Image 1 (cartoon, helix red, strand yellow):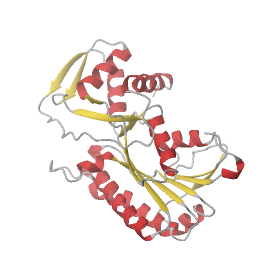
Image 2 (tube, helix red, strand yellow):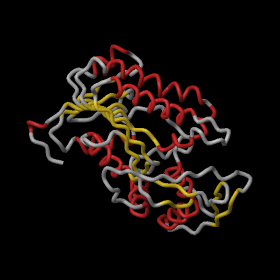
Image 3 (tube, one colour):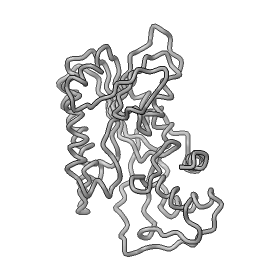
Image 4 (cartoon, one colour):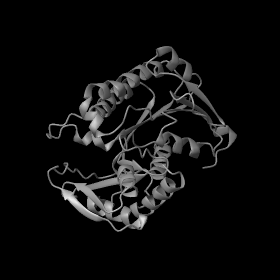
Length: 298
């Protein structure tokens, strides 16, 4: 993605130190754009970019980071995994909705021309009657509604990118907070004889490799025809298939059993409207992710 000096933009990325944020930053550092990053992690560093350390709940901080900005990629979010989201639903709803609403107040009085917001296909489960209140999903859902209203009132181009489950190198593999694929990788890496799958393992899931998501985020920002995108790889695989692929890549022989006392979660497959067609299938993506895991001794 080569940019001439005349097309150089000032780009702000919130949540820049996160898994997806770092992949997006890495890609944009190869361009002539000027990068401005927002992070709450004071140990975060990024040569070639200016970093603002602070809290998006603070109005003055939002006004400060938006000065002179042309494009915003809003990746900030309060997220762990479903167990946390269900146990503390209000905390995760508030932790996602309040910073965005505060940020949008500041955007109204800025020179920003385009705002790209990263959402999640998990919002499709908000109205599913499984009696699980996922505060993260509710927060994303509320933010999508807020952005639609903001776009209607503002001259700023707002792009919502609703993504399938993301995985890849740099992901969070910690047992307590990891999502499905990194959690499976970590568990299998530490298993020697057997491996237990919760439920029948027949639930089908869709994913997107982090590099493919980044390409869609970048392309969405300049798309003139649409403002809402659902991105992901259309291939749908069962939990059993993912586990089998990961075990094979580790070269292990594990006895698989199923804990049927834990019911299978509801599955909703998605029709995608990718801006850029994903190129990394699950086999390639898992291989790259496991290589990262092993190389970094996560």
